[in-house]
Amino acid sequence: MDSAASGLSFVRTEIARACKDAGRDPASVTLVAVSKTFPAEAIEPVIVAGQRVFGENRVQEAKSKWPALIEQYPGIELHLIGPLQSNKAKEAVALFDAIHSVDRASLCEALAKEVEKLGKMPTLFVQVNTGAEPQKAGVLPQDADAFIKSCQTTYGLTIAGLMCIPPVEEAPGPHFALTAKIAQRNGLKLLSMGMSADFADAIALGATHVRVGSAIFGTRPPFKGAQA
Image 1: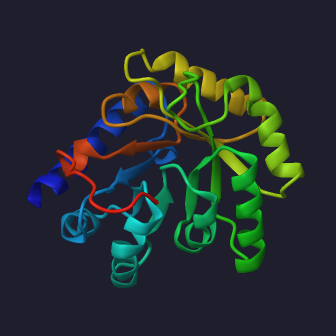
Image 2: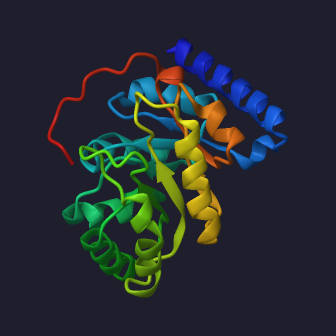
């Protein structure tokens, strides 16, 4: 468990170094500690070490472990970074402070309905599939401008930023740069870019949120349970 706290310290140091190299204030970058598949007992030492922003991939998994931790530790901010099924929108809006994976009209409609019912607007990111990978969620870059506008005008959603996951076999820099360009022309200030292997590159290209899991928690255990 101590190794996770050590990992957190290492990642924070590397974020500060990357910010210095990029001429940025480290406070401008939010570390999202990706705790998906890790049990509460593995997460708790990282919370005790001062981390308060965490990322989960699945609604059901997050529901099983986070309510008790949130009750015990004040100030936890929970981000959904994985694909979201429209039928899970109610639970997602209720539990998460941010959703990084807005990517289709049916999900926008479901989110808008639950935002109105619950009176709570999570911080929303549109996911952009910069590599046009068929197996990956996200809107295509050429469709992003129209989709962002539709989120705002058709569904009344406040879009705060963009998220991307570059193809694993390609250099991430061009994908980060493309995402930043789309965000800039749409007046969006937040960029969820960069993971354990490439967050320094993402910071250099404007990331405001980096999603780091294995560099903090170590090798990820396999997920056991239903997809959600």
